[in-house]
Length: 143
Image (cartoon, rainbow, N blue to C red; front, top):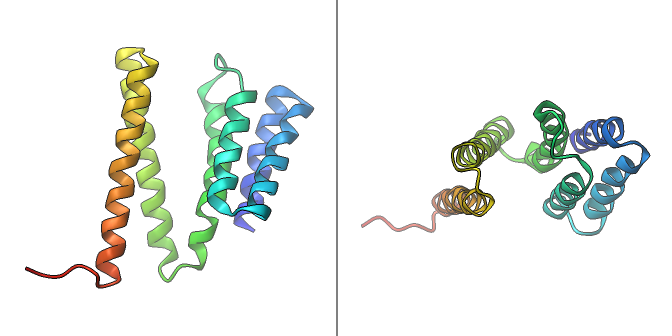
């Protein structure tokens, strides 16, 4: 249900901004979710949003569409043992990486540096998640 709400928000926002072509968001996310899973659905939604939304539009519109896609991303965490903690951690990590990327872009106005900051931010978050998972599973030995 959370994923459906996310697809609805992202699609409605995109349709309002670009017209009927915005329905491609629902098609991409739905097909990705059905065929490959949540991560691919989120990635396909990102690709369609970047391709459709104008770069000179208000950031709030883009943020609303992104928030919808984030609901798609966190829908799998609801079945987790600690859903609130997992969703909050995911959202905090997303805001942190997004904030870092935005700050680098505003400070440098350089797409390559912004892309590098995004990659570094994602790498740090993913490594922290990987280490956390290893600790939770008891795969880390004490020295």
